[in-house]
Length: 230
Image (cartoon, rainbow, N blue to C red):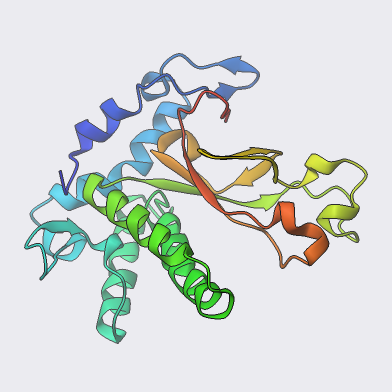
């Protein structure tokens, strides 16, 4: 399913996610009087891809698969790719009456950055992170997912490093390593639109030292995961 329709995206948000508005749990964000308006705005990214006037700009055909995907998932190879991406963001902003849509722009930015960072790590540390990032990227592209990015920690004392804080959960950290993955704990300030996206990409907010190793973590989590609350 390379491209989701607007209605498919709206339907996908009725998945049991825990979203609170003014202290109250929202049963269905798509019809909420306030959050529903935000969802309608953010979902314009999907509407543009189906609009005949914008489809050529909002999509691209992958030469290897022959499939049509959202242009946001086209990894820039040259200046033309970057200019097309910029043009698509501008078109979405115009459709949103001057407010950037954000549910694909920032998430794919994060995915592209992770390609660069993990390649550097693999070359210098002998790790295998880039393969994981590529696998995740392909899954996201194939399913036409939307993302928010949790990149800013609540921090506490900004003059101290993560491992020096009075409370260990002022930054997101790994608290358990298991055969099937990691367990993390902490709070993040996310980018705009997390109630309206499929997944949240978590990245560190600053450079880390050896003492901050538990805080040097990046991962993605579905917005409707039982332990995630927005």
